[in-house]
Structure formats: structure tokens, C-alpha cells
Image (cartoon, rainbow, N blue to C red; front, side):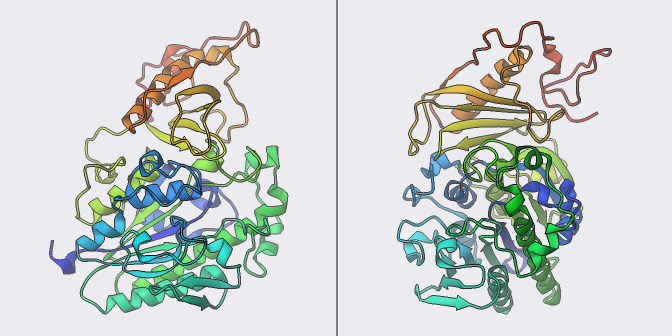
Length: 475
């Protein structure tokens, strides 16, 4: 492909954003009109899950296309990734792209701010901070340039990064080579030292009235009532910045020549599943808003298959015509976008570390999770796990009824246990022992789940036998 025909690529990366902040996922607050429009015009990855609901492990996966157990980043302290790994900037740079990074990095062990060149994973242009929430506040943004000089940027932090990205796009558009820009926000992540979600002035107040609260947060509460309005305000400003980035492309005549990926590293459960905000296998932690827009993705519609964060790097390379490295754990979704016949995994595989070592599967119908009673926070994997939760996402999409104690669902757990072990081995982990749940005498006399119900594409109908395969497409 001639260099001038290669598409530009922009990754618009948010931090800790739930999938249901978007209108396309049912949020009625009007927070994300730009996300909703661009996802509808392009390809909406409806069922996208992170492969690791922790910041640094997820970021290592998004740069490399590898599971965190293979980047050797099990938690936010075990960085940098193992030596010798190649990432997106290496591949795009080798293909003649100008590569740029703006924003939060969180993959360096050299301190909270400046990142040495050898730890930037090949990015040529640099305006970043290793742990941005520690070097800035919502209205005091400090990043570091290529020479590790501090750079103070004016305005609300989302706007400051967006302004920098617009300057980069305008400058690189004047050059003959295409550009690859990774724009990494800290929002809507909480501000650590304040434990608050600082929205732009006036935005929290805008959402405090008539606040829509997702069912899991309404039921389980956590920190929801003190934090959700500010969180929504941050998401609103991010969406406005997405619109500004797209307006920039239109003004420069680049909108049809630029691939945009919008995604997040993980979600947010507002202290409803543990004592903080993520690090669990629940939808609130793992499900993320994701779309692709631009060449190859226009009119792609809504993809219903289970897609993982680890699939996004090979997709970007494939869509840009660069080829997918054979050693990536993820796989390109381009065959799905093109509606080609292809074998695609029927579940997303999730690794959970740091507060505990766990593993989970998300299928079209079920969420199944296990936790190790033995592993340390620095362990990449464990030898032994115990079953911890099972949710029927058809009947209980916000996971308020853990079925792990239900004897009638034993057949479901037996089936998913084997699938989970297979995915763990496929990801390079040693084959583990998963101890089945001890039902005791807690659920006698309940109806046994029919084998044909396991991962059926619709809820069980007792008066009608449904012959179906596991995770079949909806009829």
C-alpha cells in the first residue's frame, strides 16, 4: 500500500468508563451524542470487555495485544512490562507512521511524571505523564515533553489534552506520512487524593437533577450517590472532546481517511463490589464502550459477538493494512466487520489480579467467575481456584442475583468450568485446578436446568424444546 493511501489512526482512550454511560447502551441522560453518532455511522462493538479490570495491566494489553499474564504486569505496581515486548507504536512506526502519545501512560517504574524514552514503547512524539492523576488536578494539568521537561497546559484537563491532540493532528497533517495518535485521558477516573470525580464547573450540578442510576448502583449503593453526577459530568466533557476531534478531522478533510477507536481500560462499580472501584469480574468493572469509525468500518453496524480489549490492537493493525503479528493473543475483528465466515470465540476471557487472583468468562448469556484462595497480589496466575459467582445475563443483566449457590445451575458451572480452563491454557497459563462449588443443603428440590438451556440464545421456554448450540446467534 503506498504511504499516502495509509489511513491515519487515532485511539481515543478513556479511563474507568462504564459501558452504560452511552446512549447506545440505554443511558437516557443524553451524555454521549457524539459517541452514539460515530458508533452508529461506523462499527459499534456492543459486547466489548476488558481483559483486565486494573489500569496498568489493561494498558499493557492494549499496547501489546497480549494478556497481562504475558506482558507480566499483574498489578499497578508490577511495571514496566517484561523487556523486549513490541507495541502498537513499534508496528506503526516500522510502517512509516508518525507516532504520538498524549496523556496518561502508567507503564513506567521511573516515577509518577516523566517517562524515559526507553520506556515509551516506541512513541516518537511524547507529551505524557506516567500517573497523570498524581501530576495534575482537574484544572492544573502537567505533562512532560520529549525531553522530559514539564509542560503546564491551561483549561479543564480533558480540554487541555484535546487541545494538544488537535495541535498534533494539524501539524502532522502537513507532513507526507500518516500519523498514529494515542490520546489517553484520565477521566472519568476519580481524582485519587480527593476520592472525588471532579467534573467541569457546572457539569455535576447539571446531572444532579433527575439523575438516572443504573440498577446495580441503585440496589447496592456504594459511593454512587456522592459520585455519579460528577462522573457523568466528566463523561459529558469527554464526549464533547470526541466531537471536537472529529470536527478537526472534518475541517482538515481527514474524516474519511482516519480510523478512530474509542474505548476504555475498564469500568467502574462505585464501591459496590469491593472497597474501591474496579478489580472485579462484574459487568460494572469489565464492560466498556467501544466503537471503530473510518475506513473499513463505515456501515459496520452493531457487532454482537464477544470482543475483548486484547482484540483491539490487532484490529487496528489489520484495518490499516499492516498485518497482524502471529504472537498476539488477540485477534482482529475485521472478518466480523466484513461479515466473513470465521470462527470466533464464544466468550471473553478476563484475568483479575492485584486485590485477588481471579478469572472469569463472559458469554452471550452467562458470567462465570473463580477466585484463588492462595495467590499473592504479584502472582500472574494461580494453581488453584474456587467457584465464586455465576450470573444469568439474560435474566439479570446487572448481576444482582448470584446463582453460584443454586444447585439447579450445576450443569452450567460444569460446562463453563471446562471452557474457562481451556481459555486459560490457550492464554499460556498452566492448567489450573478449579474446585466446584459446595452446594451442601442450600437449594434442595429446585428445578434442574435442562442441558439445552446452557448458553442458549434465548431464555428457556418450558413448553417448547429449543435445539441450540452453545452461544448461537439470536434467531
